[in-house]
Image (tube, rainbow, N blue to C red; front, top):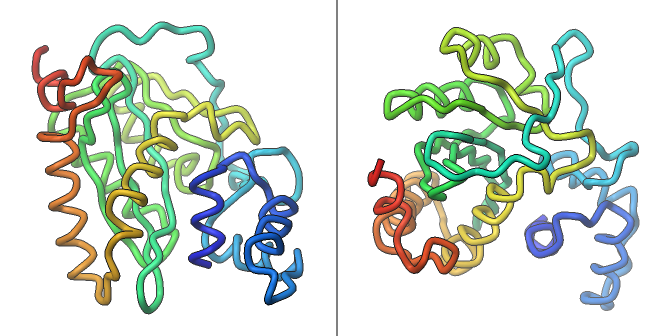
Amino acid sequence: MRMIDEIYTRCPFYGSRRITAQLNRDHYDETWNRKRVQRLMRLMGVRGVAPGPDTSKPHPENKIYPYLLRGVTINQVDHVWSTDITYIPMAKGFMYLVAVIDWYSRYVLSWTLSNTLDTTFCSDALEQALLISTPEIFNTDQGVQFTSQSFTQILLDKAIKISMDGRGRALDNIFVERLWRTVKYENIYMNDYQTVPELRHGLEQYFNFYNQARLHQSLGYQTPTEVYFKK
């Protein structure tokens, strides 16, 4: 699962076929079967971006909202926020991480951890972020957590426009995908977290660094905090 996660983080457009092929190229001492890879990807909550059997699906009773950001220029903070869930490998076991990010400043407004792919920890992260400010548009994928009525109702109650990635288009949420790659290569893969408290403490330190000290070339070598709170 750790090796699958590294491949997927590097190439989020890879589905189970390409990940299986990459595993067989990189770890030729063992033969990898696609069904095994698919099973592990389901367990991890990892999905390929190409439409097909591996694409995450919303609950059939949940409403799907259109993608509102194609061709839209993001030129101020709190114009667009988005969220996503990623798999976090640990020395023993794994956790799931959800974060809310402001697209313009790259500022991480909130994050939470869970040992299950439930909706509650996603709603908790959203409510924490809304204590800071309110966006005009909130973008997610079509996963069951984000299409659930309990999650979307929080946004509707605040009169926030809901945008959802096109099916099989994970890169519609590109800023979160970049955040996950950064977090994993700069923190997760460099640390051998043994326990959930260790992981939580490590992520708390990293996100403080990410927001307050990490210079972003795309922000003119400013930090997300400097850009976000200029408003």
